[in-house]
Image 1 (cartoon, rainbow, N blue to C red):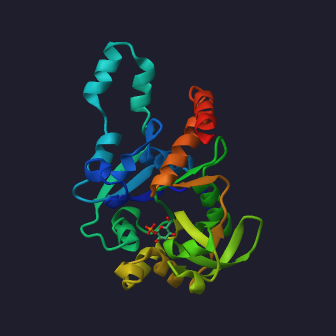
Image 2 (image 1 turned 180 degrees about the horizontal axis):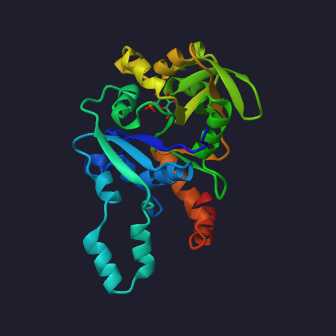
Image 3 (image 1 turned 60 degrees about the vertical axis):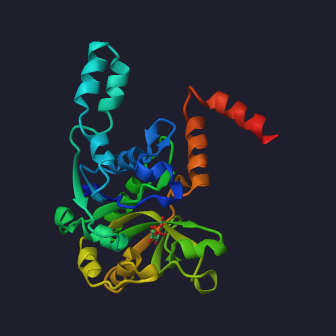
Length: 292
Ligand code: G1P
């Protein structure tokens, strides 16, 4: 079985209310972390995992993501004319040539499971990835989280879901798994629950925004009734999948920044600035200065 993951779905129809007023006009996924929008980090990770088809599940008001990955004729010809080749390469490098984008509209905000189901006509019946761009996962020069997961999924013929321990009092923000360890980083999932209260949570192992799933999940999603928050939950379809095949929880190598909230975005920005050779020293100096 190929370890490549050809298709990756990005649910990007959310309104980004936590970042209002910026998100009145800027899509949440276009918020920059240093000089790249969040969606670029997500796409880079998908391409690193082998993807050649990126499926963006968007809403009818959000055009910025399509524009961002489109060719910018005027800008590119101006940069070419003025010999700014490094900038030109940057503008042209948002997407490798062999990768194509498909945009699907989610007509109503009915939940993450519903958003993923909207990608069914493009994905069909093959294993695919799901990346939630809010979760920026950085693994330096090592393989991205999705690539690590795609390899495990192919080796084990299983679905794979990224997990991370969270403080008990935060279980109500996540899908929570109960799992039996099978190796250093992987555990076989026995149960998944969407956003349980701390006292009802089976553990503090939370699902974060990366999934490798079989095409079968679409049929299960079609039969999934609204769950937590009245939404069609991907977690509930995964719970149904567990009755048919094994799904692994995977503690990825890398650091996750929850850019769905303000502090997470600030942390990601500082961390990425420290990774940038031109910014690292000045950023470190500034952090020392303000820490006193
Ligand atoms: C979604 C999922 C949840 C998961 C989380 C990770 O929730 O439903 O299971 O833990 O993403 O970010 P959301 O953050 O969209 O409410």
